Image (tube, rainbow over all chains, first blue to last red; front, side, top):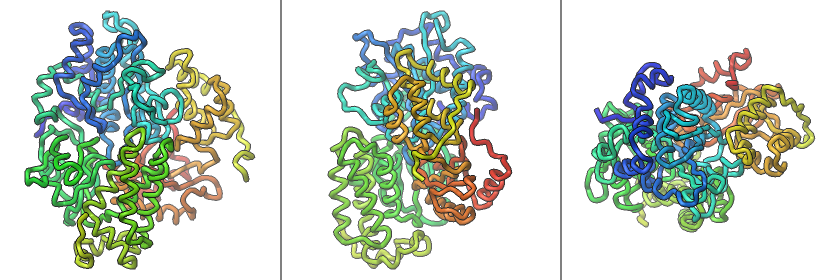
Length: 455
Length: 176
């Protein structure tokens, strides 16, 4: 059994309530930090732990904290990003729904480290029932003296509130999230200035993912060095993986970073192998934005090494033969899946979610969706594949925020690894009329119709 | 009928106003506008799940901001409805993992059963079917959102049951 530090108590009956959570040792990190540590000492522990942002970017959390501007004297804020919306990702929801006090404890300890006296949890609008759970948990924590003025007689004050979004993927981008928290449209801001200098209401602000903040209590209770002892290399600690698609046991798993992709996919402790006897075709290991991997690059890297669940191993080979750990949205496809249809599905998502601020993304995501739709619906032209390649290459890197890149990468990877499937759609429109076209006749069986072309 | 011509009766009850004031208190006194998103949710829930221009103007008045600041937010976020919608809105997640688990067939089934097309309410205004983007329930697919709650691991039988429960008034849309 892999070590659990976030979900170790999730099956304790009543852990959702304050009483049980406290009895199980909850809020110990707040006591330790406020009574025995300076804020900078907490920051140092988090730096030592090597904890990386769990929202997708993987930026070292301690370093992000150390950028917060303390010189200006302006009020500081910690904002928790609970706007979980990356397709394939549902881990934060699990944590918040079943262990709301772990997040609140993490928010208090982390706010103390940053010197923030007013902090927020920004949760996506669709998680309305979890918003209510968090509001209730905050009220319980406040009644028990963990929030408010002069917490534990330490002289430290903190108010914590939940803010609800209203259905916009873009608000997961930290500056868009801040705009939304200010009551505006979720248009990402130009950086610099970074939120650590000018964030919420132009005050120094740190935005961290739910899972990142939830790891802080363990690090404070134990030590940064203990946390760094879990995992491999720069992939320290544990990670929540949201596993979905054509596998037996879909759900949220906490893994020690470094477990092999093969073990994660096939062991009964985790995914338990494929859903049916249909073979594995492709994997999106880190949410819809990251490059899709074809079967031969899933368990082994191009160099022939075992592929591991780490930031480094999943990106081994760059975009040519690798992908990314991203948010840990692990989507598995068997041979019933159509890569063209799936890529169109993702492109529709990005088109819908583009904020419209930057032309390459606003226009380009729409073009990607339309061209993919026509290929999937038997109206594709030979030149469409190169057209898609050209569009995605013109979006990538040319937008204010990473949504443009996120929209481009899945298209580029699908063409890179599955170009013959696109060609098949274009050359044999009569064979793809039904949306379930690969269910009865998987692509492997008709592949011979297409002479393989590499790009 | 033009959207702007549909009248909506505005009723800001004391309970609603108390909740609005509580939400406003979550932000510094000079940052009332920050409460806009949560306030719009509360107001919409209390007004048949949609926001007419008059109602949006009322929200602007309460938060002491310009009406345009409300309009631009309402038009940006998908959860705010600018027209009357079916009372029971079945919002199916139609992103990749849900598709792999058969949501498209299930949406077709639901539309046929209700005799509607996606995005058009039933004649009695009771039901509407919509396809939405990823709801963060990929491991529990296929699924939909109904009011404030998720209905997961859906099957045709479960959809039948939900429709029956809605007709019988057994479904709670909002937890207030």
